[in-house]
Amino acid sequence: QFTRPYNSVPVGQLITFNATITDNGELSTVQFGITGPSSQTWDMAMGEDGRYGFSYTFTTTGTYNFVVTAVDEAGNSQTYSSSVNVVA
Image (cartoon, rainbow, N blue to C red):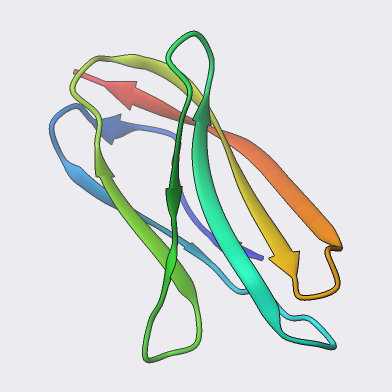
């Protein structure tokens, strides 16, 4: 589950992506990735509230696709994908 509006994020503004992830075992990794020609992936950190978060500043306007992938200790993975619209 995600807390968002990611519809009209001003360019140059720091935005935090938050995800609540549950598993019946232990999570191995939770990663945030921007997909496309210049794909990049980062580890998300668990906050004091139990949600995973990642903060990023977009420097160019446009629509960016992103994914959050959680992998548990058993190797099972789940991916959520969405987009963010960055405006001037």
